[in-house]
Length: 135
Length: 143
Image (cartoon, rainbow over all chains, first blue to last red; front, side, top):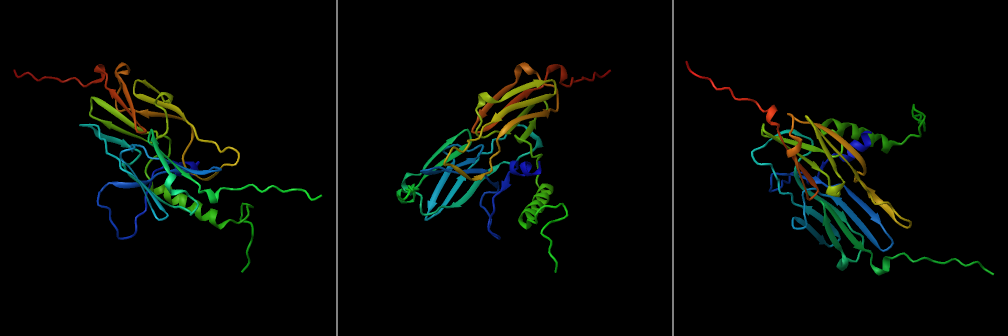
């Protein structure tokens, strides 16, 4: 039970020591699923509160960074009486291997979930080698 | 030094698992929240309560909300993609499954006036207080 409980809690994203962010809001690490398919790698990230306009994805060399800005929507005139989750932006960084075809990366956003499709470069696709029985 | 390959529970000695378990225990003490899905925040003005829940990847139609007096119940299912043949997970951190949560509200709610909105993976439920439950103002008349 503790295992699943840990997974469900929002974790703060790591920052290098001594470095501060310009915005005072907290930054969380989104939970991700990474699935490898035959021709592509699919990254799914939970980022509630983020839409396609506030999502920022950059690829520099082989570092893929996803950053989702959350516009804190506080119900007007209301006071927070009970809190289980913190509100803040989302950030996570991944290192890509050479085998990803950078030009064909696709990203979509639906219901607060980011779906990134990283197609494998032609050279990296698995080739099945047939084994023949010797006569 | 004498090493035993088995710990006192008879399991094979797995140092990383033990370290992970310790970290998890420590984490559990410092982190807020109940670990239940979905996590909710409750806002209130005294005449109206607003419950927000993070439900990324869930269709608005598949969440079943019900109100009874002072309790709000959220029910639904979050589906996960299952790996087909030739596919494999590198990481699987997102939670999936059926959920059911009951939230105690600060006051009784007028079930007929409850509104729910779902946007960008966040469910917002507005719950107005019943007229009968509202505090009555007593005017003091000077003699």
